[in-house]
Amino acid sequence: MDFKTTEITGDMIYNLGENNSMISDVIAEIRDVKIQQDRERFRRNVEKVGMYIGFELSKTLAYKEVEVETSLGIAKCNKLVEQPVITSILRAGLPLHNGLLEVFGNADSAFVSAYRKHHKSGDFTIKLEYVTCPDLTDRIVIIVDPMIATGASIVLTMNEMFKYGDPKEIHVVSVISSTQGIEYMQSHASEVRLWTAAIDDELTAKGYIVPGLGDAGDLAYGGKKQV
Image (cartoon, rainbow, N blue to C red; front, top):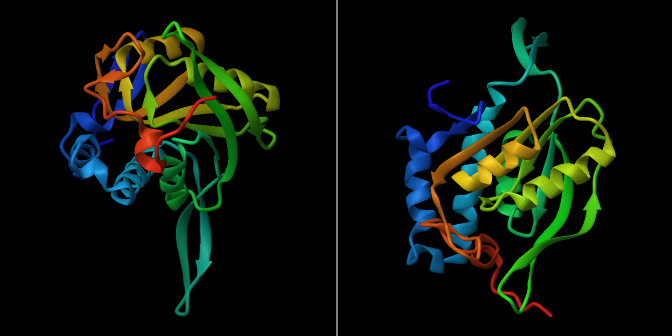
């Protein structure tokens, strides 16, 4: 690995933003309020983060040696033993999901509709309304959510995933994570690896990451009205 890992409550967190690379350049654009006004560019930048993280994550997976016939002979090559299941939390997770599919082109996909239901008091609860998922028994599962803020959406999604089988590995991929969200996730799910491009320490009273980047779903796809 050519990037650092951060130890939080005993589990490994892969923070690609701790070393300078092109992912640092992309994160700077993703956070920039002026560049965020270009919705297409924002989505593309999030996809790039998915590709960069997917490449690093792929180094930790199992490979097997195979013989490949070329026009001049036989070459010994290494190929991925199995494709993962990429699980996206709708809607904000879709650009990140697409970036990972650029790396794991034959992966299976799952989709979870989990969102914040805001109340007049200013509080919110996480609502889960829709899931489509293959059998996860003994599979490698990658759960995608661009912002790990409170960690509640990720924990709810993981609990839902367990209804579809017992995965052998769970990875979580985000663009920006909060320290509080990471600790909450780890307190509810052990042996989960988090891959993120940045870690911020502060959450607002409404559960938004500071400095963060804002609402990733709105920046990617436009504002929404809750009824």
